[in-house]
Structures are given as structure tokens and as C-alpha cells.
Picture (cartoon, rainbow, N blue to C red):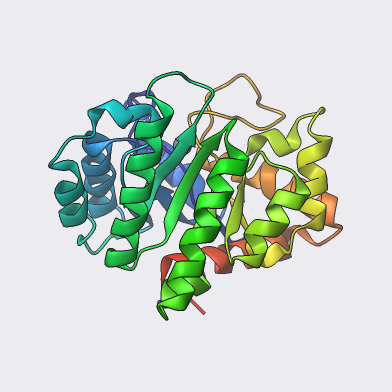
Length: 268
Ligand SMILES: [Zn+2]
């Protein structure tokens, strides 16, 4: 099976003791790409360092809304410089988070919009973090994508992904119409997640990414333990079940989606 884990915090300390083994294990089940998103500038650099060490690992750079108070007058330039690294394929995680009260909403919004502009200049897709803020986030994304299209930017065709999607089908539809993808994480395997499975059922498979968000959001049957990229298979299996498709096909299509959006050369 082919799999791409397009959202995995493999740089976090919880992998310090067995990072290499976790990567090997992922490779052995068919994981051929792991994308490490950043939450601030130090993790942007850590993601790049890991990407330099492993062929299958790529990085995203950016400041996540919960790290919004670390943003200062030099942040834009630092991220812009990091974005030039050949293994950086996206700007993220960026977005809005109304769940944690770590940064005032107005500042979150400002930083989000600045980094969308950065992504536009760098011609890189975005990885969006959104918690208890789906509607506001989508409004901003749709305006941005429209602007890209008006300017004739190629980015308008594949502007990015709403990571660990938690909205409803109608909102997913709006994203799809603006060429965005949605990332599906472990909760799709949870007993109570009928709403999310409904979203998956209705969404075009060509707009779905597989993400662990490891070390968080561990799927069943390992819920409660540390998550890792080899557990992507449980997400692929659940999506196959929900959409009544062969597991291999779900792996294949979602992997190709990530190649398309992140500009990776297709293996076959
Ligand atoms: Zn994340």
C-alpha cells in the first residue's frame, strides 16, 4: 500500500528515544512521504533538519495561532528565508484557534493573513490549523483563493489543506469548491465520529489527505497511546470502509493528492 502522512510532528521530544525506528516502521507499511509542519520558528528549523536527514521527510514552516505571541517584526523575514529551503513544501501550520486562549483573536487573524501573503509570494500551499473557528477560517481562505485566481496564480488550483478537519459537510463543500483539501486524522475511527465519517462519505477522495498529527490524535485500536506515522493505515482503512472502496485505492489516491498539492514528483 502507498501512504503519505502529510501531518506528523516527528520533531517533537516524544520521538527522541525511537525516532529512527518509527520512521523505519512507517516505511515498512508503505509510508513514502512524511510532512512535518511547524508551530513556531524553532520547530520550523527542527522540521527542516529532519527533512535534510531523510529522503521521505519534508517540512512546512510557519507560526501556529497558539504560538502567536512569539510573532515579532522579524518573523516574516525569517519564515520567508526558511521557505526557500528545497525541502520546504508548504507554509504551516497557520490559522485560527478559538479553543485555547493563548493569543488574542485579532493578533491570530493578523498573523494568519500575513502568512497567507507569504505563502502567495513563496508560491507554496498552506497547511491550516483551525479549532472552534472553522467558519471564520474558511471565510478568510476562500477570499484568499479568489484573489489568487484573479491574479492568475497557479496556487489557486491547489492552495492547500485544512488540517485535521472538524467542520461539517457543507463547510467541506465550500472548501472543495475553492480547491482546498481536507486532512483526515485518527478521530475518524472513533465510535462517536459519525459527523466526520459523513464528511468523508460526501467528500471527493481527490480532496482528502491522510494525517496522523502524531504524537496526538491516535486512531482506534490504539487510542490513548502515542500516535505514529505507521498508524496512518487505520485511517486509510476507515476511509475505505466509509467510502466502500478498496484500501489500496484510498492509499493510492490520497498519496497522489499530496504529490499534486506539495509539488512532489510522482514516483510512477
Ligand atoms: Zn499539528
